Image (cartoon, rainbow, N blue to C red; front, side):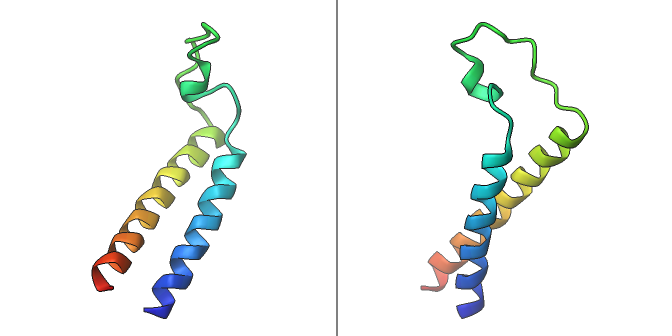
Length: 70
């Protein structure tokens, strides 16, 4: 169980850093600007986006596992 706590903390910090690396003015932050032309991700931005999704899934699964084991 201690390993799961460390993994959860590590994933939380890593997820925070990866989200902070995301470029500005994408996603819902462009709603007020009227610039709706950029919805397609390419290259490194796409890889970063997919990695973020994978981290969110891993963090959620580890957190749920910790919740049900407690």
